[in-house]
Image (cartoon, rainbow, N blue to C red; front, side, top):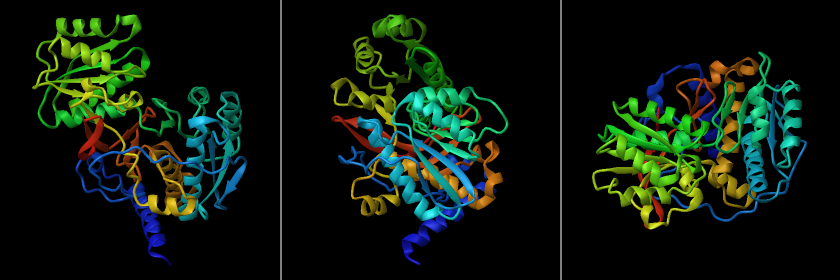
Length: 403
């Protein structure tokens, strides 16, 4: 047996151990020496964008493995653009995880949603009725919302792959979302001493979810939100949000901006223009800032907790050799979800696919780091902590979390 194969089998055994032993929340705190479960992210000093890559061809209606536990995976394999590229990368990663860990434990049925919400809904309904113990995907928002609205004791667990999905009971958010990023960033700063925080968040339900998570993460360190202010078109924009904050709070020690889909630069500029962001005030952003780029001069010096797509642990080299292109965070999501399914099947068999098991507060260590799922379906992750310097992310801490 090769050393690489032995290592992956050891990871599966450790996953089984973690599932069997409720070790408590301490194992997921920043800076702990918790054991690897699915793998360990490599250390690095700075984040970098993944190299341009072309994933393999679209595949649909594919069955991998011959294990007794049935798992469905719904991916936008034939979709155009970034959605299809992500889906194909996750499929390739899933196949690697099956070869490493899952072939004798689970049967993975991979279906192509085509990036079409209607098709995703149809395939999702079929997966629910197919006897699958776990559904991985879909990535389409409408289909995920439909899943969250379906009740019933026999509904399988779902690891949803939609972007910026907050989660629902039994329908868990896999991808890093803004609430988790902002909570982890705020916690990292609170751990250093600041106690008085201001939060600006996007309007609507997503913003409320961010507020709840950030407030909870701060409470772990004895810090709190002095005020949380939604901002956006209906609330008058950045200038009004800053004016409202200044009328309610004086001398904040840290400002957290979770801007949703909006560019954070105008709000940061307004805060600086009013003298709010002095040398004694720390600015914390979120992973969604990266959607707009971080080379704007006003954003320099801000802090962000986010995943480093260049560091996806021990699967990276094997993935490159197998598929001849560079892995990224989508590869990590695809691998980790299938490896988790294989680990549960190995430890507990078909009866292990329950909310109690998947919501184990100890969590799991995957190629994206330590992660766990809450009762409300939200995902929580430990991740690197970065500072924006000269338009790039410079790693300050290897791991931080908001839980």
